[in-house]
Length: 312
Ligand code: C5P
Image (cartoon, rainbow, N blue to C red):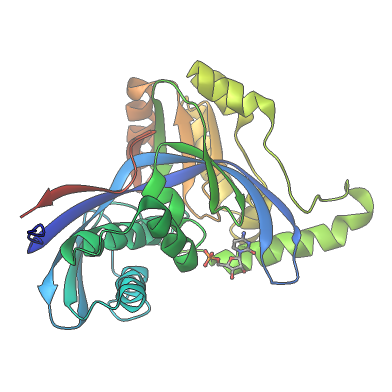
C-alpha cells in the first residue's frame, strides 16, 4: 500500500466575518457570556501559505495595515500550528506566510481566520488528515470565532459562538466596512456592557442566560432581501462600543446619509459594517467614506469557509 505524498507548500484562504446579530446573555461564572449570533462570511479573506521548516515561524504581508500583528507564539496562527503538532504528535515544523486582507483588530475575525487557515494548511502539509469534526474541536479551543471561519457561509452560533448550525441564505449581500486605526479590546467591550447592564438593571428587562435569534433574521436571509436584513441587524455590544468610542456613531450616521440601508458595529468593534442595497450603492458609500477620510473596504457575503487553493 502506498500513502499519498504530502505537499511541500499549501495555500489556504479563510474568510473574515460580520455578525449580523450578536445577542449577548448574562455574564457567566467562567467570565464568558452565552451568545446567540449569526455570522456571515465575507469576501475579505486571509491567505496562509504553509511550507516545510524547522520549528514554527511566521511572516506577514497584506492589503490592510498589519503593523500590530505579532509574529511570535502569541499569534493565533502559531497557536493553531502548535496545537495540531501537540495533538497529532507531528515532529515536522512549518513556516506560515500570512497575507492579510481582513482589517486587524477590527471585530471582523481576521485573527480567527488565520487560525482556521493555519489548521487546514498544516493538516494538509503534515498529512495528518483530521476529520472536519476534529478540526472543528481544535478550532473551538483556539477561540470562539475560529470554527466559523472553518465553516464559512452563514451560520448561527450559540454557546460562546462556537456551537454552529448552518442558516439558509440566498443571493448576495454587499457591505462597506469602515475601519479604525485604533483597535478596541474585546474584553473591555464586554466589560462595558456588563457595567451598563449593572447600572440600568432596575429599568431593563431581565437579560437571559442564553439569548436567541429572532425569526425576522431567518426570513430576511432566506428571502435574500437586504432591506429586510437591514431591519434585522442588531448588536448588543454596540452601545458599549459606542460608549468607549463615541466618534463611531458619526461613521454610522454618514453611511446612512450616503445611502446605506443600515450600519452596525461589527462584533466588538471598532469596525463599522454598512449594509448596502447592491454593489453600485456600496461603491457610492465607499467613495463617500474615503472622501470623508475613512479607510473602507467593499465586501460581499456569504462566501465559503477555509479551503485549500493550491497544494504543490
Ligand atoms: O474568545 P475570545 O478570545 O475572542 O474572547 C476574548 C474575551 O472576550 C474573553 O476573555 C471574554 O472577556 C470576552 N468574551 C465573553 N463572552 C464571549 C466571548 C468573549 O465575555 N462569548
